[in-house]
Structure formats: structure tokens, C-alpha cells
Length: 403
Ligand code: NAD
Ligand code: MG
Image 1 (cartoon, rainbow, N blue to C red):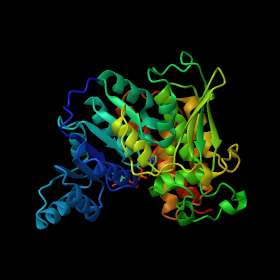
Image 2 (cartoon, protein in one colour):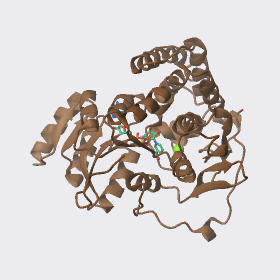
Image 3 (spheres, protein in one colour):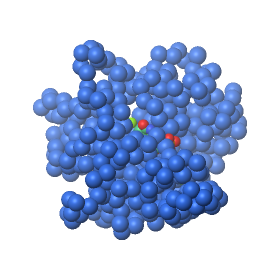
Image 4 (cartoon, rainbow, N blue to C red):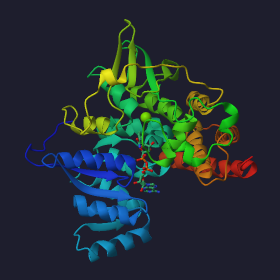
């Protein structure tokens, strides 16, 4: 991609999911470099007060609320505060700001399948796309990567593991693991809040316990995914599509300190890792400035303070979601779509105290079984498979409840 923006003008960035955890970390990095970046658009679902506050701080040209009624409230609020930001509403407006000609880069940090259309809009417009919204790649991997290639978009991973792998791969890597001499991708996992919790005790864990991560501070959905280890399962699928590596060559390594963010094991016996303090501003700053480097606000790694790094095998008996994700990737077609949809529904039900923690995996397994597998060769068919799987998952949740 040839970059024609003169050094003197700041890059315009659109942040999808600005009110979330990744949104906050992105805005923190942006604010450290006002000479390099300026905010073109901030988007959120329905948190009017938070987005209004961010508009006052960062003066974007546009603020978009996916929820139209929330957009009306935000418009009134900003008018009252004499803030010149223009307010838009609805999913089509999310897509519009993602593909606006003024935008140089798009941070895709909406949580879940709802991010598919706006993220794809950014890709199809050939933007530099910083991808945090992993569910999009899980649902539409092949179609998404084809869209990246045909629009000549620049896709950079924000998930810390995938950003680490990207940094450990050769600079000219072309999604051919054999040609690059890759033996394995070693995807590190913190193990989540229940790494040492016995199986029986998992039955009664609460949403509050599941959302208290030992290392990372994140949104509620990804926090539950970390607790079930479905997050790592989604990341295996994400790594497959981003780097063109077969599932059999992607191995999960539990590393509780979360200092090594992932590794590439080469055929000559070399293992290249990326290390750093566990703070999402590291991968965000890396992707924003790539191929350069900028400060992220994260302190230098203190090796003497860390002292030891530990490694364990994942326990697939207690965390069956990891196996389900590998199976869905092997099955292909609509299976990863159903996996993601059932997981989103089950996590929502768990957070709403309508489903027990250990039933999340059961609901996903039953949905995969009932939904069957078929080809998803268009975005419409992906969205249909998503809707179908959600219906099945909701029925399965209804059957199980808190049992
Ligand atoms: P979050 O819950 O903190 O924020 C989610 C954002 O998405 C919010 O701005 C919210 O308004 C927006 N959103 C939610 N529903 C929406 C809808 N229907 N329409 C439009 N916008 C909507 O989540 P997060 O932790 O920031 O995670 C965002 C994404 O990044 C997820 O896909 C997650 O898996 C991924 N990710 C997060 C982290 C992390 O450290 N938080 C790390 C790696 C990857
Ligand atoms: Mg991750």
C-alpha cells in the first residue's frame, strides 16, 4: 500500500466501539500523539453519556450511535454542550464512517457479530484496519481475507497474541507457513480466572467472578470467554485465517504471567516470541504506527520483577470450549459461525444469570450438532447461519437454564 499522506498532516482514525475497553486504550495512544493522529469518528452502541464525554475530549467530526434513539439523545446533549461533533445513527452510519474517504485507519473494536458489516465496509474501502473484533474473522474468515486481498486493505491484528505472532513472522510473510519454515504457532493463554478452580466449583461461579480477570481488564463478553477459554478457541480460528496456518499447527500454551504474548516455532528449532507488559496499548500502538514504532505509555518490562515464567497444558476436560472451537474450524463452512453465535447467546444468558457457567459449553455443543454444516459463500449466508444458530442456541438455553 502506498502512503501518500504528507508527514505534516495527522492521520484520521475512526474508532468503532470507542466506549469499550479497546476503544479507551486506543484513545489513550491517540492522545499521546496529537501531531500524528486525529479522531475522525467515534462510535458506540447506546452509552450516550460516555460517548458525549469522549466527544468533548477528542472533538471527532462524527459520533455514531448504533441505536437510533440513543443517537437522538446524544445529538441533544452535544447541542446543549455546544460541541460541534455531528451525530449519526444506525448500522448504516457505522459503515459510512468506516469507509469515509477522509479516514486513513479504522480501529474495529465492536464486540461480537454486530461488528461484521462495519468492519467489512472498512476493508472493502481499502483502509488500514486494526482488528480487535475477532468474532468477525471467526464468522467470515475466508470471505473476509478475500475482501482484504481484493481491496488491497492493510489488515493488522490487535489481539495481543496475533499481534505478537505478526511481529515474530518474517516481514515479507505471505500466509504460506510451509514456505516460511513454520513448525507451529504457539498461542499463549493466561488460563483465565478459573485456571486452578476444580470442576465441581465451576458449577456455581458467578458473572462477577468470571469477569475478574487475573491479568487483563476487558469488556464483559471477552472476560467470560477468557474464563471458559472460548476466547482461546476463537483465537485459534483467528490465527488460522490471519496467518494461513492449519489448525494442527496451532498449539495453545497456558502461560499465567501473560508476559510472552505468543510465539512462532520454526523448523530449524528457533522459537521467536514477543514479550511485554500485559497492556493492550502495546499492540494498539504497534499497529497504529506500523511499520514504525511510537510510544504507547506502557512501562518497560522489569525482568527481575517477573523472575519466573510458567507454562502448562490447557485442561480440556474443565474447558471443553477450546476443543469445540478446534472441531468447528476443522468442520469449516457454517460451523465456526454457529460456534460464535451460540457462544454469544450463551455468554449473554450467563451474564444475565439465566444460564450456569458450565452449561455454556453444553449449549454450544448442542447448537453445533443441531445446526449442521453447510457452505457459507456470501456474507448474506454467513448472517443467515448466524441467525439460525442463535435461534437454536436460545432454545437450548431455555431447556437448560441454571441447571
Ligand atoms: P467492550 O464491551 O468493552 O466494548 C465493546 C464496544 O462495542 C463498545 O464501545 C460498545 O458500545 C460497542 N458495541 C456493543 N454492541 C454494539 C452494537 N450492537 N452496535 C454497535 N456497537 C456496539 O469490549 P472490548 O473488551 O473493548 O472488546 C472489543 C473487541 O475487542 C471484542 O471483539 C474483543 O474480543 C476484542 N478484544 C478485546 C481485548 C481487550 O483487552 N479488551 C483484547 C483482545 C481482543
Ligand atoms: Mg487475545
